[in-house]
Image (cartoon, rainbow, N blue to C red):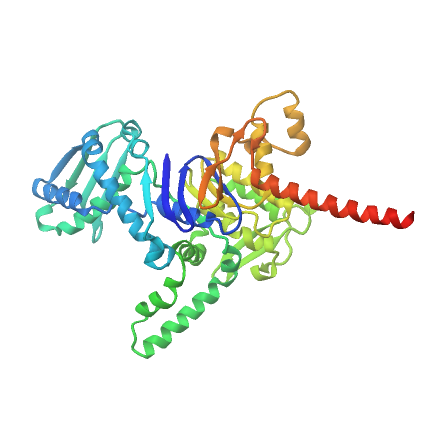
Length: 459
């Protein structure tokens, strides 16, 4: 599916094709974080269409009739284009609030989606969908039902004439639109580049917020209004969402995810221990030594642990307690605070996530990560000696990445361009190669100039 952003930060135009793995590279301040944030806003399933008139009409009909049967094909042909145009407009208008930025900064912003890929009739026809609106002690007011491989979408209400119509309209807009755009929407989780600091200080932020609320209540000032102005508005929505995730971690820790087994690789190969979350915060339990198995040193508060441990907490927690097949994970600078060895290992872990069914979008400055991904691409094609090579360097089949599953992009000079890729070399990243070649050239020049002077003195 192609997504086009226009007027996004310093990017005049960015056309992106989604894939199992999407990679943005480029210099600092080129717009990669803008892309990550915009994709997070777009892919996350909390959004709905903005044109309420269609859903108000549906609500009126179904409350009068009690049941309404719609043809999926008719909806896609006659209503979906108008709904999509409304969604694109609403999305553009939401960007200043989402980025916590002045409205004029997004005056030129536009979103264009590939309607043909988005409203794929055959894909939507195959999908089942069911949502129920309940009130009180579970009384059902409204249902949306679509069975797999059936064209009919049934909307059913109970005692609709005595129920508020705007409730039905809102329910239909939020849920019906999510089904129509289910080829795009999914559960989204973002790891912002600020994650190390937020992992450390989120409890302090909460403490300050609670103290502020107490003072405001004593002064008879509405604390919610002040918090909205003084705290929440300071952060772009992805940062606010990440802080909310940290606050909820102690409640989510009892859940087990679809991908929890991947944490074993992170524990053993990268951080050398495991995490513990409780009401007092985040702790790290390091392994005593590899020879003693899973024996741990004394618990360390997160602020006493290494920068690698601080950085990777949220990825570990997501994989252990939240991840589901079909999710999208957006990682801003996965290489943060990592030694080159760990950057390579993290690249393998991200590819394992892709192969397990999680879509990954990342922006990176790391040549080590790109080169390791290239190894995984090259090894995905069979050749004589491949098994011996994999055994020699410790690669497993779950590390291998098909070249057709990755879309790499260079963000530069206000635009986004697709990088070349092939099974023999992987991603051809000219940006990194140029810098490495310049560094090698300067090092050679300095070394041989000094050597020449030493030889002259010896003569």
